[in-house]
Length: 189
Image (tube, rainbow, N blue to C red; front, side):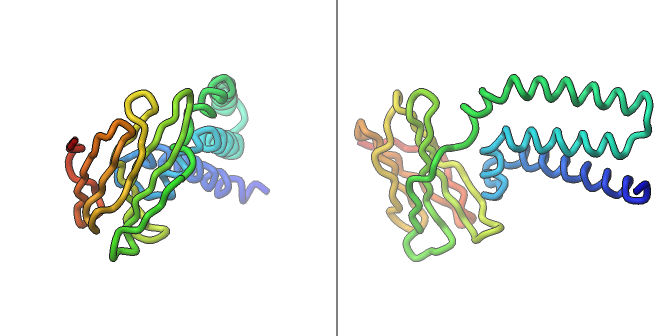
């Protein structure tokens, strides 16, 4: 058993680092969709990171002061995460996907709309480019129920998106060859 403690502790430590890295990278513009979707589950990532770090500390540290210190630190973190859990459940994720449209003539580029709500409804508009597992996500914009409800999001060309709000505001967005939406919205009436 003692022969596998070191490699198992290293595996758990690397798993915890992977969870924390996915959590940090998943919210970046142009991130892999897999990482972005994992970031939408902060409670799962938090508890998984904490559990794997705890296992690595228990297996990798010798009995005594360092192990006790690690256990106390992990215990305090667990208590804080337990208190934060209800808030993480409210804030986690971009909501449920309600629209997925392929760009005209391009199977590797999609317009995605996800709907979520904390108090008011929120619509998140993304461009996905590539194929699984290397598919990337770029944020086009978000609309909340107070500022302007999303009515329509469509491709007008393989490199252009039109987003229309309930008040009739139209946003035309160009998409670069790499999939990144170019520039801010331009309103037209």
